[in-house]
Structure formats: C-alpha cells, structure tokens
Amino acid sequence: MTPTKTSMYLAVSSPDLHEFWVGNVGRWLQTKGLHIVLVILAALLATRCINWVAAKIARRLDRGHALVRSEAAKHRRAVASVISSVTIALLYVLVAVDIVDTLGLPVGSLIAPAAVLGAALGFGAQRMVQDLLSGFFIITEKQYGFGDLVQLTATGSANDARGTVEDVTLRVTKLRSGDGEVFTIPNGQIVKSLNLSKDWARAVVDIPVPTSADLNTVNDLLHDVAAAAMRDDRMCQLLLDEPALMGVESMQVDTVNLRMVARTLPGKQFDVGRRLRAMVLESLRQEGIVSPKPHVSATTQS
Image (cartoon, rainbow, N blue to C red):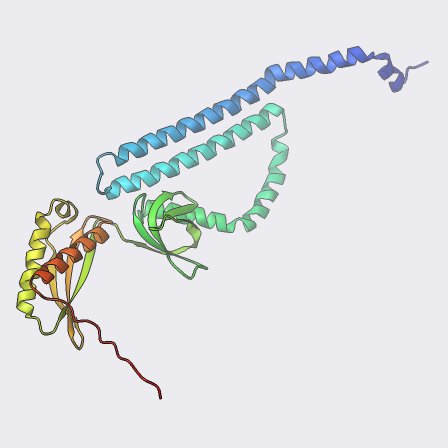
C-alpha cells in the first residue's frame, strides 16, 4: 500500500518538526538575517557620519564671518546641505536593493509592476518633481543661500513670506521671520524671489523738516552726521562708504522730506537705518529744528 501525504506528515514527530523549523530559522538568522541587520546598522551609522560631516563643513564656512557671510559661503552652505540629503537618499536606495536581493525576491519580475507603479505615481507626483527641479535651479543659479534675507512670492498665498533663509533643499525652502515664525515653502510654488541681502544693501532714511528751516543749514548738519557715522566704531563696520544726501525727495504743505541713503553690508540696512535716524534726530534737536506737529481738525455736528 502506497503511503499518502497525510500519513507521511503524521510520520514526522512533533519534536522533529520543531527542530526542523528552529534549525532553518537559526541558520537564516545567522546568515541572511545577520547580513540585513548589519546593513541597516551600517546605513544608520553612515547617515550620522554624513550629517556630522555636513555640520562640520557648515561650521567651517561660517567661521570668519561674524558680521556677514560672503555670497560664496552662503552658496556653498546650501550646496553642502543638498549634497548631504541626496547622498542619504541614495544610500537608503542602495540598502533597500541589497535587502531585497538578500531576501531572494525576484527583482527582475518586479520591473514591470514597478514601471506601472512609477507611471501612476508620476501623474500624482508632478508637484514633487516640480519642487525638485525648481530647487535645483535655485541652487545652481545662486538666487539665494543660507543666511540670506529674502522675500518670496508663492502661488496660492495672499501675502509674501519674508525672513532669513534657514535651510534650502531641493524640495523646500525654510524661512524664519523677524517674529520667530518659520515658513516652509515648496520650491515649485515660488514664483518670485526678492533677495534683500545679496552682495550689498542700501539703507534709505527720509527726514522731514519744516519748510521754515534753512535747507543749507540742514544739509550741513546731515553731512556732519554722515561723516560721524563713518567714525562710529559700530557703524563703520557695517557701511561700505559714507552715507550720501540725495536732496529734497518730496514737499508737503508745512514739511520738506530730505532723503539720505547708505550702502551697507548684506542684511545690515535695517540696523544702519535705525542708527542713522537716531543720529539725525539728535543733531536736528540740538539745532532746534523739529518737525511741525500734525494739524488735528475737529468737527462739530449740530
């Protein structure tokens, strides 16, 4: 009588079956399982190493730029951030391929389904591809870099995002505003970028004086303020040259607006503008020149 499959299965004792499975699982854990664990641990260590190298490069680029970073340093900082993120992504892809190969999955048979899945995801991931391409051109064209003060116009947003660039990747740009808020903007949605700290900046100070004041005296006072700004220990480090008086900018009924401009280091135009206004106000007050008070009209209703 020929033994059936059921009788052959019952002929195997329970302890032998347990030993069979334990032996196979143990051998798999000692070979392929150990290999997968080591590969994952190596990927995690490599990720930490890449991040450490990127941070060290960033600190070296920031060294020697206490007041302001150069354009080359800001661009290199952005490129280093992009290279580290792309390297980590490629590392994870290689690890995934190695794990699939170790598990013995038929990679060749997965090509056709992967192609179909990739085509389907391609239609749904158009925005991500647009973000990556836009980020690539932002980096290569040096539109802005780490530490720049920028104003970005994004599609679908009523207000522009303005702040200091804290991070630039191929997909997003992160800005920190003056209030401490962080904007995360996909690069594909940026339609216009205004860099307020590229190469140099300009501080514009409008000075209202009464029409009764002697403009020649006021001009002399403003020239003295410009010369004093270059002698100031703090201001001379921020100014590229002596502030210039542009003359009368506009006229009203009882005031004349004069304009003074100053070229400054990138991103330092606001500091210079505040300090110049304080110096001008103090100089005018010492000469007794003050802006007239605004007229307040009161109406009565019967």
